[in-house]
Image (tube, rainbow, N blue to C red; front, side, top):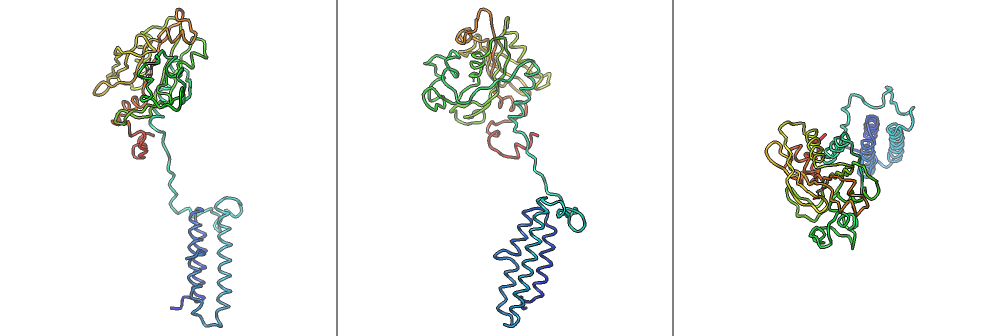
Amino acid sequence: MNQGSSKDLETLEIEALKAIESATDAPALEAVRIGVLGKKGSLKDVLRNLGSLPVEDRPAFGARANVVKKKVEAALSEAKERLSGASPKSRKNKRGLSADVTLPGSEVHRGSRHPVQLVSSRMIRIFGNLGFEVADGPEVEDEWHNFTGLNIPVDHIARDPAENFYLQDDLLMRSQTSTVQVRVMEGTPPPFRIIAPGKVFRPDTVDATHSYMFHQLEGLVVDEGITFGHLKATLLDFFQQLLQDEGMKLRLRPSFFPFTEPSAEVDLFWRDGWMEMGGCGMVDPNVLESVGIDSERWTGFAFGLGIERVAMASYNIPDIRYFTDNDVRFLQQFS
Ligand code: DAH
């Protein structure tokens, strides 16, 4: 068959204009443009056979091809305007519609909030109802706020360079959100009740329960007459509101932290076992005094909860690595 006939040009024109008219978005339109006018497009295809025409027919065919090309180009630019909504007049096609409404709609992919952010927001809301305000601090910290101000002596194992991400002398990625305790106490006269959610960093070997980065939510209350009873009641109230389950139990297991005295581990019993959620205690008088707060008048309690731990307990997630694997099948479950 002789492809370089004017019949081919006619078909090409009709089909191209039809395709342009029914393109519903810019990528579809661009695909039509490439399919017709592109290097390997249908117009080039037809022109390629020009040589097989009788010599006397060639000029007329060439001229006709040019007209088709111009028409297609004009239709493309009109369609482009219609799709971008630039001109309200040209937005409508002959039937007065902006597109073929019988075509299936294009699917909108909705994201969902990350489970760590979801749980963090819930924790903030609950503590907010208990009268806590949110405080913030930097992720790059100095040794004073990460250690010294928290009564952690220079030779303490927690300060070992192998246990921390040091950036330079006296500057490290914070290893705990307790840093914000010091920052708040330095800048705010008591009484106050704050929480500080955020990222912390430690060079831990990654496994099902450890990561080099995770989130903590720090809490600090300083007021007159604060006791260990207030601490326990606050944590119990928090976990009851979070899990809304009578079968939940809270255990404060004696422990040691340099910045609290006495100190305890916060253990949660839920579903089928005990889980460690963080640490807590009464603010050590040394900490209060080092930021100029009179420890004879003011007492306080503090706690630090692992947000991933709370998320893992709430949603029954077995492995902390899921949070950073970026697998949408995991992430989509939390909307
Ligand atoms: N900062 C501690 C850690 O990262 C957790 C902690 C323990 C925070 C006791 C506190 C506290 O506020 O009182 O292991």
